[in-house]
Length: 78
View 1 (cartoon, one colour):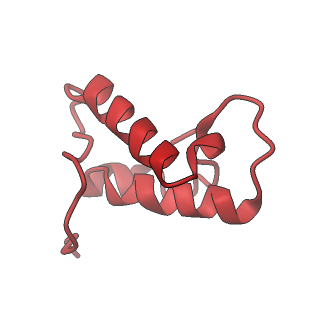
View 2 (spheres, rainbow, N blue to C red):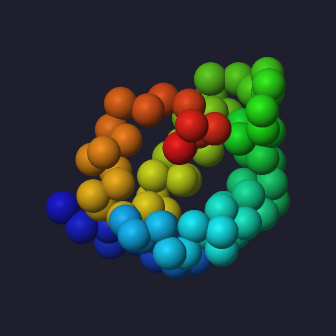
View 3 (spheres, helix red, strand yellow):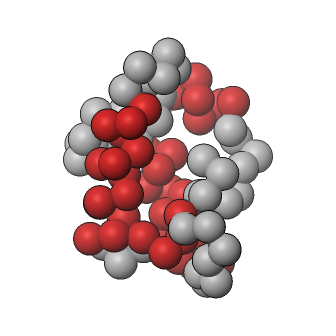
């Protein structure tokens, strides 16, 4: 199953070569959308806020990484 909706920035590769760029882009987009607290250490984000951030992050990672992190439910871990 492929990801058909448009990405706001380049997806995270399985090689990790674009991690820093991906992480900074993800952080900025989440903050702009009001979900930035969900990826901060020691956050008190609601489950809804965490879910929105997790959906966004999973949308922006390679399909193989989605399968690898299938059971992760905390966007901070992802």
